[in-house]
Image 1 (cartoon, rainbow, N blue to C red):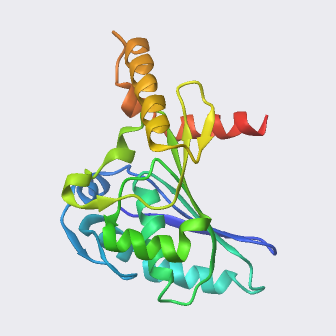
Image 2 (image 1 turned 30 degrees about the vertical axis):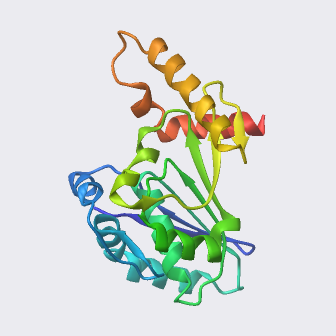
Length: 211
């Protein structure tokens, strides 16, 4: 069920991975056991298997489009964000220079060793966007050994973009968002944590930033 596409212009290339949509994607999300990662450390078994299903085709498409040595930007939402992160991590061993990684609603994808290697190589050009109470950004749990990667860009409950917060400020902002979101969702279908994960919400927030 894994899908991705490569889009190219003369000045840049975008590599994108689709998020959870089909039964196979849900099964990939549920495989919490970690296995050795291509860029070092250990990574989520299901995410790695999902990426391997399309990695050869994506690499071939990238090679065919990159005829002017264009900078490569990688992106994805949800499961697609996890695949984008793993693809970037693996690129360190494949000689592909990544100009930027932008993820939306990204889950944790690897252990502390993987995260350290990733941060050393790509931390400054990786931006992890989190919308308020997005529940997917909190899984798999840290107690299973998973760590996040990248620079977090957090949209609070009012749609304000926060970055580089002190941990306690981030906690207070998230707690406030949880309280406001859950009260606002009272007697409405769905939960705030699920609705905040919607890519439509991320798109709306990004458009608002552009004015």
